[in-house]
Amino acid sequence: MTRLRACLLLLISLLALAGCGTPWATVADGAGRPVMLLGHDPVAYFTQGRPTRGLADHVVDLPGRTYYFSSADNKALFLRDPGRFEPQYGGFCSSGAAYAVKLGSDPTAWTVRDGRLFIFGDVLGKTAWSLDPAWNIAHADRLWPAIADRGWRLQSLLAYADKVPHYLTGRQIKAQWEARHPGQRWPDYDPGGMITNLFLKPPGWRAAEGAGQPALGYPQ
Image (cartoon, one colour):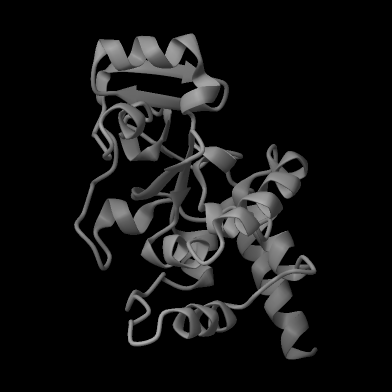
């Protein structure tokens, strides 16, 4: 048995044990609801310009996902037009979405561009995306309709096994960024490794647990 085949069999076994994952970047709260953005208010990014923790008293349940809001006013704004405020690409890392990968979701790594909320998996994802936002958005927008309903573990494994033609490695992206930003340092951040992110932890675990950054905690 080749090493590659053994690795693939291991990944398939882990996938069978862990499940395919949810289509959205959710984590369960104390009531078992599938909460987006680790319980942060999606409207506050637009109205307050910063990540703001929501409250379980102000909740909107949509198919497969639940949002917390920091106020009744923000909840009302969302209910008028959810599509305006929901994060792009199911709340997964917008940089990964350009490669059909559904991993990572840090509500403190974000940007609003052209009236759309983009969430990143971590500071590395946001830095990589900043190289060419229009390029990333174009690829993610094109790929997303075909993968939106797939569980994040399954889709990410498929994306790694059969990479899109425009795929760039982390090393290539880093080299491009450093060439464009002479004298600046690429963020020193450990994203946690493929096995941990694909099979052992939920989306947003590093932000929730404080691995390399302040701990946000999981929604209660």
